Image (cartoon, rainbow, N blue to C red; front, side, top):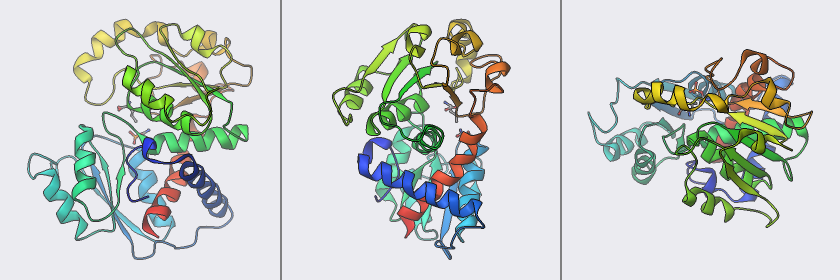
Length: 305
Ligand code: CP
Ligand code: NVA
């Protein structure tokens, strides 16, 4: 593993190994602390968009493992406008041991990886959010005991988070159903690629415009904001289209009685998820957010040692 850019790049074995390592690192952290395996190592956190979880969880993961991380916000580097992406990659590589970047165009993540001589971690692009998906698989396994054979129903926008979850589900033996409005589903190419990642031909991938159909028999219901960062101009239009895809108690009642409800956060409460569900008995939202840090420690340790 040279970089961490997409769940699609990992073998099922590598994905499982990252989860195993993450569990060991969480256990150690909860029982007194982690070994300083990244002593002397540095991580640059490059953000073209806002963040709470990604920024703080990567920063604290480095601190807990004995390393050092620092934040470079949208107004500092101005990736691609003040300076070309390849030049930023070449310059940063001379100073730090690893680069994490959150960008708009996925192409910028790919260019950083191409021109950097140190590992690059994708901290979200318009295309995907693999660090989020890793933490989500971690949370499902932690709660349910295993992943194989479980069904995830993603309800809402077929966006960056949905895409990484689809790939992660395929690589861990899960079934995946996505319910999205017409025009907001994942692409046929995404589904085709995902089918190629299956561990077994029995795994199903379903796309529908009916949320009730998607959640029937589901072990996990997942949702995310209807308007992602960078799509703000579409907010009004999306607010008219997406309400039938709200994750509320009525919808949750259509799934298995022990269904987990997940959301990568930040949530727009009252839009894609109600307070009653976000704060209800099925919700693992904050366990999920905490697990970003534990799962990402595994990424950092694998890339940097
Ligand atoms: N889930 C997630 O990536 O949160 P942030 O945007 O706050 O980093
Ligand atoms: N889909 C959301 C995820 C935020 C973590 C966005 O891209 O804004």
